[in-house]
Length: 142
Length: 155
Image 1 (cartoon, rainbow over the protein chains, first blue to last red):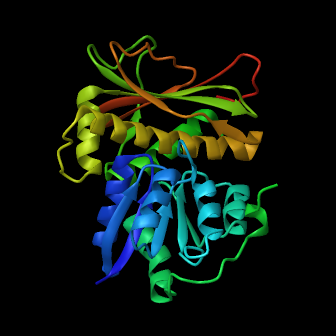
Image 2: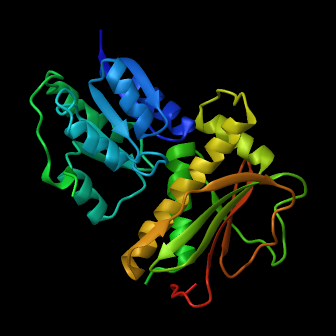
């Protein structure tokens, strides 16, 4: 059956590249969903089974950090692994994403091997999607 | 201290090698040279924060079409929008990495939402802030311009 993955990026080219890398990775990827921003991603999550999210950070409408927080605050989605794929490479950006619950971080430009090496250990330890809500302090509304 | 030119060169070489699978080399264009007549694809970014200015990446349209084919690994872009998206995203990654290099010396820099458009003629090469590159598919230029009152690394 394979793992279902959601790719979130405002560039259709990047979504196609990541999708191709996933298909060729040998990691047992099943269905791949796509979204152009965080808001579209939430709509996909509400209607489809998603077991991993790969998301850009800088996107219009709803960015990747906002999406990450929304996922971590949701009772059902909170355990879904979320990997950030972005040009933001500064230590502050990485720390911020991890503090908000990011499972992994891949910097653009990336190689297929980097995608594989980030995802493989996560998929090997994949947990059931359902779980209790776990609010991250840094995601709480002020 | 890394110059802006060095930051552009390093970012561009890495991005083309990893995302396009093509090796590029520096191309020295004469001051006032243009990429070529006809349509050009320009990706523009505003820079704010520790520096204020503008970053742009220029390709000819045929070159942008070749880029899109490389990135999509032979899948011919069906629409002009697909070509603009591929060219714009490549520029976004290049400028994002240039920004990362400059930030380490100057402080936090923010990049505005990029715009990608077809223009008539490319502007003349500004030798002080532009770096041009050549690969088998053609020539393109990456430019970063700082406002007069903005600190900038030695060019």
